[in-house]
Length: 288
Image (cartoon, rainbow, N blue to C red; front, side):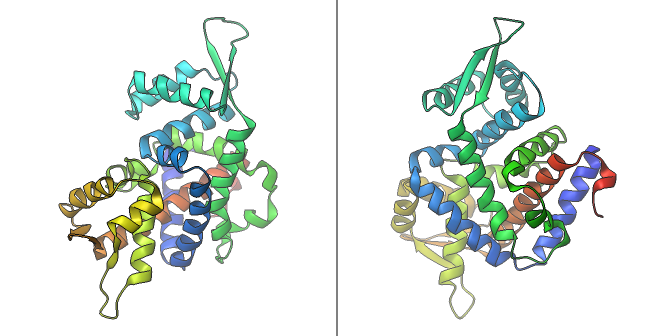
């Protein structure tokens, strides 16, 4: 599928999702993600920092899209994209090895090269995270979602990763499509921080349409980050029009609400298109 066609399809599905009951989808997604997050807060806090998450996806998607993929190729790709420095990438790869989420074997034709393979644990975690995106979408009446009930769910993670490799090559990723997504999410627990603020805003909206949220202490405790970490996000976001900084309370603005809705619609669209691309490779196989 041509790169321009991939972007057009992501944009089209994003618009469809924004015109659907995306509020309910985001809430269900958050509940499922929080259940995963609580299982291992320290791991997910690290993983859900935007650049680190992209490196993890690059490792997985390139493993499934290219036979005999080496760590050196993935490292060069991630360096070129500016995700992490060479030294930080090596440390991150070591982290996956130490936690038994990845194994290394010698390249069959070149002993100097390192060929990697994700472990069963890593693949199980990938499937669980993918399900937090796909299961909430099943409630929507959209033609693009037929595959959720008609395709083989046991292969869905592999389909997603094969397809996401094409989105990576097309530079069709959230950090590129949605302005400020990288800035907002590229911090420890960034993805869950943003979702927690949004969900809290929805629950605590007052009768006058205000956007008060919870205290720094409550949110930081929920996500296992420091109040200072959260305050730093709010102070920086205040200069961009996303937050208003109070002594103990976070106040989010309508601009933040619009940003999160767009970010999540795009995230779901990228997920759907990736799964589709992993299942079929010809543009003619897609429903327009």
